[in-house]
Image (tube, rainbow, N blue to C red):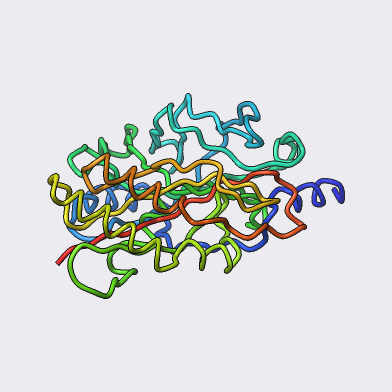
Length: 292
């Protein structure tokens, strides 16, 4: 047991996880209510449900223990089936080949949105308690907990970063097309060093983002929106190796790519702490753009 706990302690190279406020769904009735309100206007709602046994791990890829999404997750005594797209690769960062998590007696919680990615999509197929309700999930995070509820591991998606940093949470001063960098997060939900966040949010970056947005609006882009940029960073040097568009709601691919380049144009992030063991890390950086 001591070895297992020690191995689990090494799963995340960066300490401290910021937990988002999620609405717990602990019954079939609660799931049905969530489905009925999924199309309400306004900010998307974040839900959490504990899934039943039967889920399983897949292989370890790029240092992440992948969760098998080839079968639906079951919940609410088998009355709810959570559908996760197979192409969505969800996994936990591991430092031991995944053996510690595979050997742990863990339960899994799923944080998700309904119709976050596509408001026109039917989020649920609601059925009575004698049949199975199908829920199409936009996964925000997965979390493994032990029998006492203690968290063993957590992984977050770019959807959660976008939700946490939406227009209500990020006020951008000024007039005309403009933008700002929100709170960056690693894949397990932890925050980067303050020096990294400060470098990403510097004035030059905001100016480049504003220019990207102004040009995008001229092409017909949405006046308000968000782009989540995923950075691949060398921890030893702080060098940004690659910048990709993870999510975009601006409706203009050229603008989204321009914003990604603007974020990556940060001269260099400071080197990561010596305690970090991973040679590279992925960092999700939400960028909000607005226009008056």
